[in-house]
Image (cartoon, rainbow, N blue to C red; front, side, top):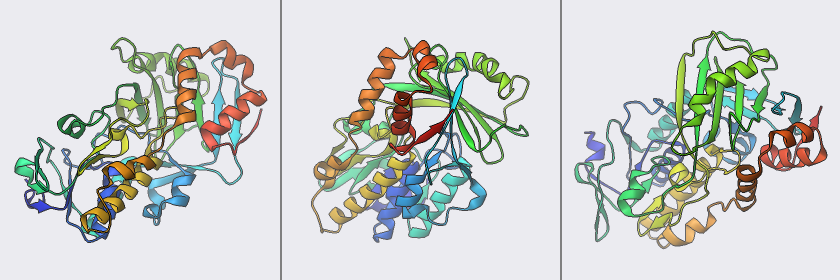
Length: 369
């Protein structure tokens, strides 16, 4: 047990996730004693994200200033494939994505938190929390005045404290291949196929030193269909990029919340952020931007409370969490009316252009057949 984890702290953040590390960094910079509990031995281990960062995050989040060029790779646009593999290229003037070496990115964010003064207790799982007059008793992990759950879509903090829990999920699986060349490496290749990826997509992206190939879809009757569909997906895309005989250097898989922000997302002296809060786009399943943005904001709000400058943020602050109203409507439509025939027919139309612009570029997109 780390000595940092076994003492009195102002705030304990459970989970060295994007949201958790952002929150801890903001708290530490405010001069508070903050400890991140992380059950893994390395913050870069066993990650469940493709690690795509959107341009908006780079523009808006100063925490990412100085991001090393060695752990990112710029992607200029999207190539969107219909089920019959016809495609359009989508782009927006000045817009881009960053593919990342995600383990390297997490280690870099952890180093920023440590530099700010946060403690990170590795191999230290969250076990229990008992309320006290002015916070929580976490057993062997010490006592704290505030607790933040940043511990993923099946949050143990949420279950323990009685906060809202994610109920709707996609399941995704991704493989990484080294030594493979990808045609059009500056595009994020996205594949629509209702049979192989119901409710979501498949994708190929040339990342940092590897090519990432993934697939995600709704969880149906307890069956994790994305895993079962990976081999048929590789077969389908073999004319574009052939991975059928290649051996992946790593495989990741996990649940992706897609039901919007949970309720309640906070209680007295406790709050959820990131995937634990359901703070993931119901359409794109992207959560890094919102995790960093709201993780930082949560840290600032908690710091204001703990230093006496503001009231408990558990009620007022969480009203700023994204409602995802339009994207929840799009999620409903995609879940209930997804049609391969419709996508085959509509791929090159103005309607598809408008929808893709909302999904990928926040209405700023253009496309060429």
